[in-house]
Image (cartoon, rainbow, N blue to C red; front, side, top):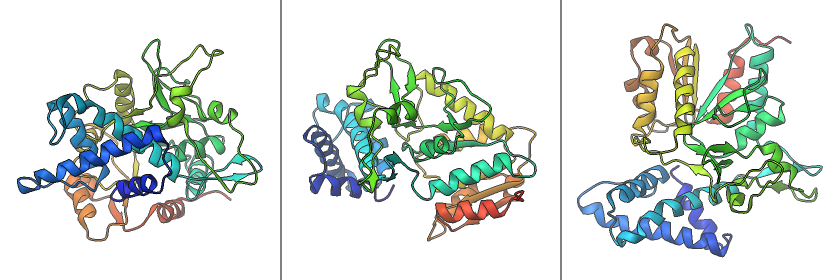
Length: 342
């Protein structure tokens, strides 16, 4: 998150953004520049995506933003959503082999771990994934390994035995709001990929449903989406957002209540996301004790570790381990902690 906006600015300055999206990028960075005015009275991290997105959302609610007329403020949040979608889609490259979009590392290893947990662990494990990420790397990895993903949205495909619950608490690049009924419904990746032809001579391809909602039309499904994906700001007050998301959050709380092992990978528990703290506190209320509560984060100064230690109650602290590791190392460590059948 700390270099996301730098990446977005680089894509813009290098001319890799189309003209329509470029206006949204300009609007976002104009907003960030205007936020520098508040530094004499307040501290605000204007280099952090979550911090800026949350501030734009608050500005929209208060109808107040330095350097902007009142009628200009609502466009800031839409511009930020566009910047997030375009930056992720242009930055996350998927390997291409024989005309097919493959799974990038380390998500290939991650999906392999999940499959082993379901089929080879002793005892077999039930798995749920809670994520604040908008991207589609995990979704594609699950489908590529024939695991499938259940988003737990009221209008998505029903859960099946071989589907893993993938609870995307802040939305997803492939979640759209339908024009007719205004339900959140995912643009299933199998359907999206069936419309694409990834040339074999290209080393990498992109997954771009978020940018293509505006042109989506499927008469066979009698389905049409609005022009942008469901992307939720990382703020505590989500009460005004779509009611379908409440079903996802409710399921997330249920999964936390039942969890015996909780592995947290790459989530730094930012101070701005009070939502997770409340979700964790209420969701983990229950009779099931933790066997493991492991956190993986390349934390250089110990701040993330202290945040988690301050979050946990006595029972969870006794099961708490912190690993100063990235995603790929986390997958390997978790795999080695289980006894897999050969």
